[in-house]
Structure formats: structure tokens, C-alpha cells
Image (cartoon, rainbow, N blue to C red; front, side, top):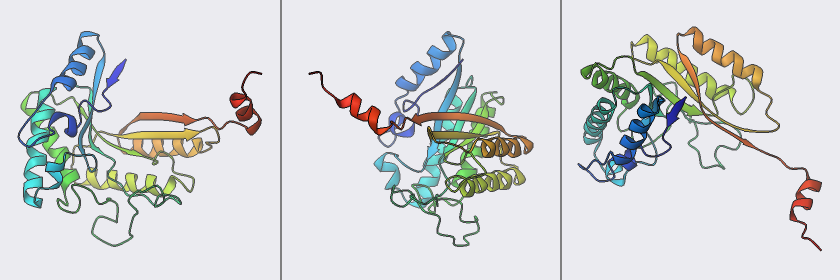
Length: 244
């Protein structure tokens, strides 16, 4: 049994104002999980979106310092966590309706990062923000003798190595994982967010993608699952019919 907070352990909740920390909500979930014999999975230490406005207003150097200070403090506070999503949703999108959905499109430029990262609160101001987040989290956990906590990269629509909606982003996540591991970055797993409907048919690609990530020595967690039910028109009409 495992517990994950949706928003209680995010930066905007814990430190909405510069220099101020409020751990009440995250502490409650962590302590309740421990008391119930459940694993606690932290979400998340760094995200390019939905950060407090004071973070976005910082200079690049100050952003870097803030990232290190925040992750050091938060990760060390929860030594009995099972895992953390260290960095959430860093990878850019290029599936057919990504632009219409308001998502960050891969620009295809050679920026030394294989055009993997999306622009965000951290990139490009702090080009090594993702690597820095992982090394900082590992150092913070080591300082409290919590070296068994697993550190994850988490992203959406990258679960399948096949299909026009998923394959390119899944490849970018896989490439990013390879690069991080080659540099000795303490990455232990990939979190996959599944947002499906009843027509989803990429399960062979999901298996293949999980397999290749596993062959890198990584765990794979399904961190979100939603399934939209497409209702046939005749059923839809029946749902809206009023009693006579």
C-alpha cells in the first residue's frame, strides 16, 4: 500500500513565499502513511510549472541557489520515504495536437540536450537543473542516512514506444535516462502518467518501453492513471432524457 500527495508536497504548497516554509500538509500525509504501515511516495521536488511567483522572478543564479536550498531541506525532512519524483515533466512534446493543448513543443534545435527539455521555470535559466535536482536530493538523503530512497523522473504521454502520440516522447525520455545514467546521476526509476480512453491500443509499446527501461536498471512506476469513457451517441441521449 502506497500513499502519494497530489499537491501537499509541491513547492507551491510548502514554500509559497520566499524564505517561508509550511510543511503541515506534507507532514500530515507522511506521518499518516507511516502510522498506517503504508509507503510514502513524494511528489515532487522540482517542476517547471506551477511554481510560486517568487521563484519565477529570480535571476538564473538565484534560481539555482533556491533549487538547491529547497530540495536539500525538503528531501532530508522525509528520510523514510519510499521514493520521490525528483523532477516532474521535464520533456517537451511534439504529438499532433500538443500545440493546441498549450504544451511546450520541441523546437528541434541542437542545444546540446538533443532538444529534450521544455522551457520552464528552470530551463534554460538553469541548464543543468534536472541533474542538479537529482544530485542535490541524493546528497540531502545521504546526510540523514536515507540512501535507500528511490529517485524518479516523472512524465506524461511517454509510456509507449509505439504510436504517433507517444513514441517520440518515450524515445526522448529513454535517451534522457541513458544520458543521466552515463553521467552517474542517481536516477533509480521512471514514472509514467497514463491518460487513456477506451480506444487505447498501445499496450505492446508500453511493454516494450518498460522492458527497455528495466534493462537500464531502472524501476518503472505507473504514477497516474485516468481513463475517459467515450459514450455511444444513443447512450448519451438516454442519459439526458428526462422522465415524462
